[in-house]
Image (cartoon, rainbow over all chains, first blue to last red; front, side, top):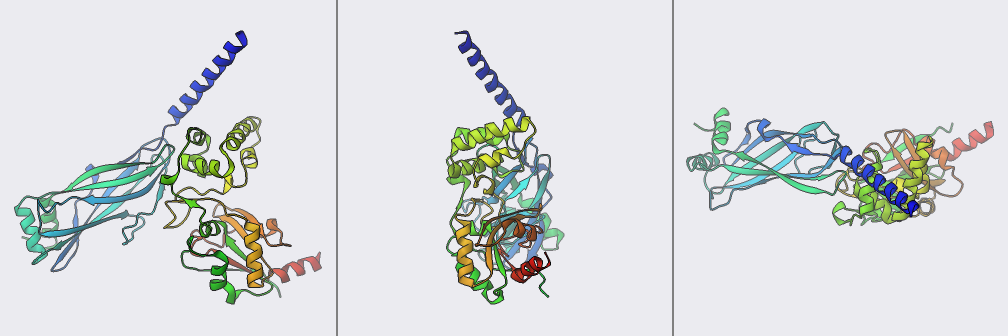
Length: 182
Length: 222
C-alpha cells in the first residue's frame, strides 16, 4: 500500500512538472499592429482603376517561434452600402513581394516580426474611377478590411482576424496627394 | 582528366501527378553520360510519390501534442503536426519510447539516441515551410524505397549510378538510397555544399559528372 502511494505521488509530481514546463514554455502569439499601419498611398491610376497600398507591421510577441501558414485581406464592401466599384485585394510580405495573391508560409521567431503590404484595387463599374471614388466619399462609405491569418506553432493551428478600416477620407487623401482628386 | 563536376538540372515544379524517373529522363537524359551519377532531392521524390499531407488533414493525438513540446523549436517535430506525421509513419508508441530513452540518454550526455530509435522516417519529415510553394503549406514525409528509385533511375538512364539525397544549407548531407555499388557516405560528402540550392524543387536533380572515372583514378592512385 505504501509503495502504491509513493508511485501515485511520483506520477502526480511528474504530471505537475510537465504541466509547469509546458506552461512556462508558452507558444507563439501573433499580432498585426493596425495602429502602426501606414496610410494608403495611390500606386496606380487609370481611367477605370485606382490601386492603393499600405503597410502593416506584425509581431510574434509569444515565447515560441511560429509559422504564418497563410494570410489574406478580406475586404467588405457590400453593394447595399456602395455599388459603384468592384474591389480586389491582396497581401504579401514586404520582404517577399509577389503579385499572385499567394502567401508563402513563413516562420517568425519569437520576439521578431515583419511587415505586410496590403494592396487594394478599385474598378469603376460605370464611368471613371475618380468619379466613382468621389461618390463613395460623398456617401461617407468606409471599407473594413479583415486581415485573416492562419498560424501553426506548438499547439493546434488556428485562424485569427484583425480588422482595419480603409476610410473614404483616406482614399481621397491618397488621391489628392497624387493630384487625382480635388 | 576526370574531374568531378556537379551539374544542377532545372525542372518545372514536380507534383504527385509526376513520375520522378520519367521526369529525370525528360529533363536530364541528354546531359547524363555512362560515367555519371544522377542524384535527386529526397523531398521531391517524396512529393512525386504523394507522400505529403496538410496539417488540416491530420488528426493530432494527445501524445503528439505533448511530445512535440520536448523537441527544440528548430526541428520539424516541434509542431504537433510534425510529431503526428512521425507517429503516423513509425507508430506512436515507438516514438514515445524513443523519446523517453532519448531524454534519459541526453541526461548522461549522449545525444541523437531519439532519432536512432524512432525509425528512419522520423528524421525525414519536413514541416510546413520546408519546401517551396505550392507545398510550403504541407508536411512532406521521407520517400518510399529510395534504393529502388535509385536503381530505376540507373537502369532507365544507363548511367553509372543514382542516388536519393537529403541535403540542406546547414551542411547536413545524407544519402538515403543508392544504386548498387555506390558508397552513400562518399556521395554525401560530394553533395555537402547543397548543389540542389535552397529551393531544391526548382533544381531537384544534380548530375555528378565523371564519377566513374574519378573513382577509378582514386583507386589507381591508392
